Image (cartoon, rainbow over all chains, first blue to last red):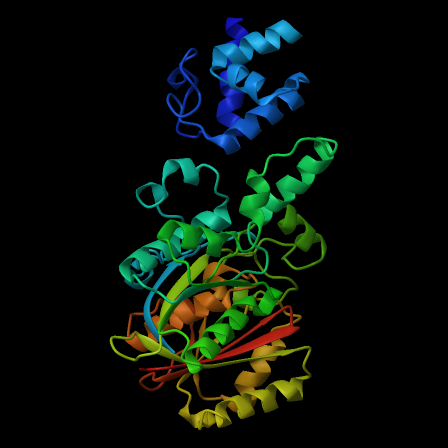
Length: 83
Length: 347
C-alpha cells in the first residue's frame, strides 16, 4: 500500500504539473480539493483520466468520485480494491 | 498610432533591457530559446502550472503593461501557431487514449486565442478581443486591425502583441521541410553563413498603442503586406507605401530587415536594399532572436528603441546609419511568400 501511495503521489505531481512540490509535501490523508493541495475541477478531470489510463479504472458517478478523489489514500484504496 | 509602452520576452535580455548594456546572448545551433522572467510574482501558481510556454510568455509580457495602463480599449494578438506544444500533446492524447476520456487542459491552453483570452480574464478587460493567425503576416494583420480601430475612433488605446513558441514536434517537421540549417552555425556568423535554411526562434513582444501622441515612444505610421510577389512588385509596393505616406526613399533613415541567413530567400532583402536604399543604415534582428512567423513584432520593439536613441548592440547593426534616425522602414518576409512593411517614425 505504501509503495502504491508513493507512486500515486509521483503521478499526481506529474499530471498536474505541480513542479514546486515534492512527494513529501503531499499529505496522504489530507483532502486533495479546496483544502490540502487546493485542486479544482479541471484537476479532478486529470485525476479521473489518470485512474483510467494508468490503472484501467472508471469512476461511474459524481458521488463515487467525491469519495475516491478525497485524498491520496482513498485513491490508493480504490485502486487496490479494484485490481 | 503611437507606442506608449512596450515589453518583450525574447532569446535576448530584452525583458530587463540589459541588451542595451551590451549583454548579448550568443547561440550555436538552430534553436534560440526565450529567456523567460520569473513569472511567480505576476501569475498565480495555480494558473502558471497549467500554462504552456506561449501562454506564459504572452502573459508575462502583456499583463504588466495592462496593469500599468488600466482601461485599455481592447487586446489584439498575432500568433501563427499559439501554444503549439500543447496542441500536439492534445492530438497525441486522442490517439494514446484511444479517443476515450480527454482532459481539457492542453486543448484550452493550445488554441491561438488562449493568450488574448487569458490576458482579458486576468485583467477583467471585457472589451475588444481578437487574435490574428495569418502565419507570416499574423502580426501585421494585428497592427492593421488596430490601425482601423483607431482610424474609426472606436478606441483610444489597445494592447497589441505577438507570441510564438518553439515546439519540438513542429521544429522537427519544419526541419524536415528544409526550413532550418543542416550544419550548426553560431549566431555571430548566421547572416554570412551562405547556406540554405535559418534558425528557429520564439518570443513575445507587447505594445500599448494609443491614438494620441502624448508621452509616446514612437509612431507606427503605416502597415502594408503582400503575398507571393515578384521582385519588381516588392520594389513597386515599397515605393507606393512610402508615397502614400508622403515620403520618398531619402526620407527613410534606416531599414530594419528580417535577414535570417537563408541563402534561398536573402535576395529579397538585398534587392530592396540595393535598388532603393543603397546608402541607408541597416539593422537586423533575426541573428539575435531567430526566425519565426511573427518576428516583425520584435522588429518594432527594436525600432522603437532605435528611435528613442538607445545604444543598439553592434550585432544588430548591419550597416551603420549616417544620420539621426527619425524614420524607419521595417521589411520582413516569411519564407519568401508573405511580405510585410511597417513604417515607424519619431513621434
